[in-house]
Length: 272
Image (cartoon, rainbow, N blue to C red):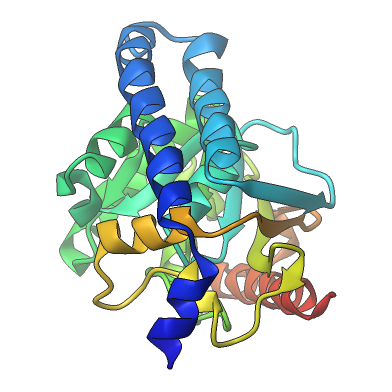
């Protein structure tokens, strides 16, 4: 029954048109970004935002934003994660680099796109934690915003997985040093993202996996199904940014962010 219902929601013609536009536009954009990566400055950092915005339009995304995005640089944006689509949506709004697991770098096509956006790849193994922290710190001390998914993996979009407080170690002042140009008190902003409506109607618990990508789902077939759907309303909420100094530990900061993000997702999927 579910397979029949899912098929009825989509249009194969729409999928072909949308994905054709998406891949053609990407093939044109890639050489431009490769050229911009040779230089530092606003154009290099803003081009991915423009690219992701056009991808949102091509895929039929309508993004509703509440709250005020931090303009302080650098800011560590902390967000829940249910799909590779989160990258496109958040990337269209935030001028910054994502943190992703190392496996993403080897993915066909999408791994290349991640590298073009200067993604910071991290290894989950404990022995590499120090190196990963240093990589993140270098990017932050250069004044770059960083977008972190502290759940560590994607989920079905109906709940928030526990945040991994170890990923917040980059925010601890003792790691920043006291020299000129070092971060003295990192600005952290929790962000909620939720896939709320399809063609103006609320997306229920059973249909949310059409947008969430997790477990052993096959990436390309999921993308084709997604592209066949109609207009998708995505709600993004920027919660008040906070300095690390307001909290006594990275665990306290992690718990604070998780509470706000979970409440934001709950509001988004319950609002009609």
